[in-house]
Length: 125
Image (cartoon, rainbow, N blue to C red; front, side):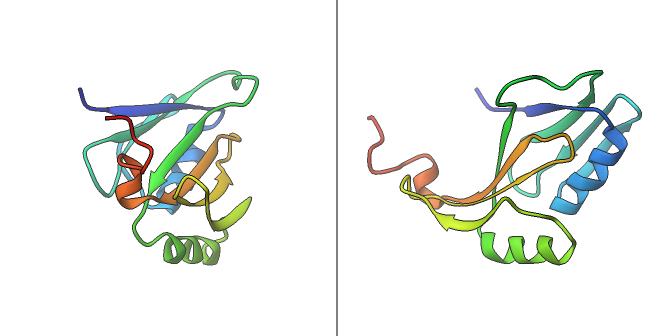
């Protein structure tokens, strides 16, 4: 099995498109006002946004995007006006992460994990 895509809710898909293009995703489907889909710059997974009348309650959705040059990416996004909750930090689970929110409040974690993404020292065989 392979992950095809993740879809997140949005109150304004058109505004969300601009945000995710700023992050570096490539827009491949634009079916306004209801839907948009992006390709990631690496791998085969895609990411999409769909229009909702109301956002989910509770902790919401967390979206992880990995980048080998995390610190450079964060610096470039800051220059484009993207605001971060936290800048890149090394985490106890051996990932380096920066956190921000999209326009609908979904948590986005930009990270670098390398080999530890799928093979941390505590992986179960």
